[in-house]
Image (cartoon, rainbow, N blue to C red):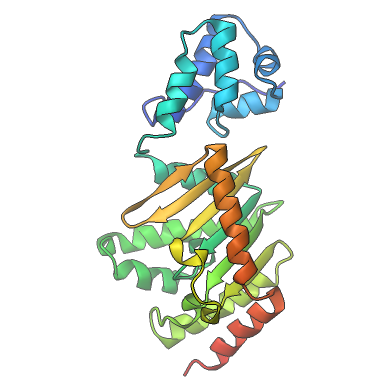
Length: 271
């Protein structure tokens, strides 16, 4: 049986509050995780992950719990508001999910994805933005994200980049040379796939913005990037929309070998 652990701090956000209340009410009623799993049609491991905040209760599971425990609709109402409210802790939660995921699907519309960036490339980007005063701290944070490639086992990472990421001169020629070499080195890993959407593909869903689909346990969570912040999406119907969009973008991308050949050409043309 999974070891009992404390749920996340309930003041973080509504999802943490749901995890907290699930464990609190379960223990108050003298129920085991296996009992909860039987009610919501989930494994003991899944219940444990929900209580740790690593997986989310869905609407059907909430309805089953509310009926079983006669809560007056507590879990259903919490999930309703959690899926529609702004999450002030989106960054911390996204980093936790990214570090724990066993499968990442990344689309980046303008630049090299964060987990692929070299320190010099990351610094050039950060110094150009509004958080320049925290550049050293933020670069270190970004480099720590790359630790996923050293995990045992590492996650599977599929990345689709815009051709813009290959020729936008971030930091100058030497920085771009190091960054393109880094992309090619990562692409040699068995668990990493990199494909490029060429500008010649014209208008496509790729122009709607960057996002990342993170798979943990039995479910997917999407991080959708936006200026000044981001949004985490876990509602199944909306997640399916992002999965479909990822497939449509992929249909416009070059094959793996052709993508690497294009990266090589840009690398060779740096003066």
